Length: 434
Image (cartoon, helix red, strand yellow):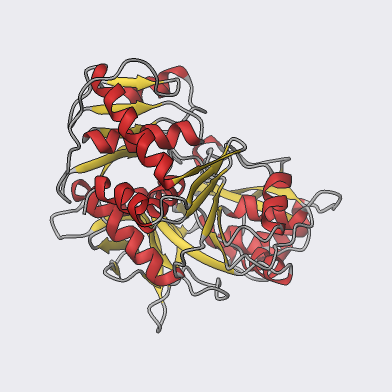
């Protein structure tokens, strides 16, 4: 299969089915197919050909999706650009592109052959989320996208009336995968240009949204605002960062049918996904995907959704994440290798300490990191965001940790802060913690 077959197949089967809802408009598959063909001719008129890279510096919406499919129709490689980046960061992401689109595709047209690309051809270059401050380009093939969509559908199910709401950036793999999967299966993607808790809550309360993708920060804001899902919602897929037990419990009590997922850009989004209603772990690997834990605790991934350029000599993607598998093969992510704090010769995983801090009834979220220390090498330090309207002291939080953690894991310093630095997709920017 190729991207030509994705969109043309959906248009042939369901020409009148709504493909996209965004910008206050609805576009059917028949219309999207025609616009993609016209966009391919407009790209050709600008000198773009098969294999050329095209930067998509467009907001999440209909124009972005039309340009994305136009690239694939022509056999060009789509490179989504995060509009939240500064000029230097954006320039780095557009390096090597033949063209950067900053406006909807328009203008003269030229002849453009419909190009079928083999499964191993690169369809899109997606940059990692940059949790360490440096995003990396990942080349994802047509085969990667198809394997990811098939694995996701097998785990979450797919129905002809499926309507997936996306408030994630389309420059990140979690958001873009919703657009691709909807084309492969001929279902509807509902795009919000950015996350707005009120707008998402209103959409979820309707009878029109069947799935939604969120990061924990988004879910927390929805639950905190009193949002309740409507009866049509079959799954709220939560990923991008660890999901705390307390937030999961609060969300399920509010009626959210949760599934937790673990994914990476190099794995074309979802790697593991829990059963709906069982979000205590990130679940089992998707069909066709293999997950193993290395002796040092690193999560290793193999399978057809893994970008070929990310595979090591041993046949695995080395994620840099730490985790464990339970007796049912379900994954729990415990942190990042590079984030381990070594204090007095002892290894401290920040995620473990954060989970304990966030279990305190007055804590909204926490971030733990190491700070250079002349005696211990590194001291464990925590930044804690209290729940609005609650009062808690650093010593109360240290006592809470002492009751639940080994002594060397208890933060030596706890600082109360109004918010934590995060990427556009909601991941913690630990490198910005002082």
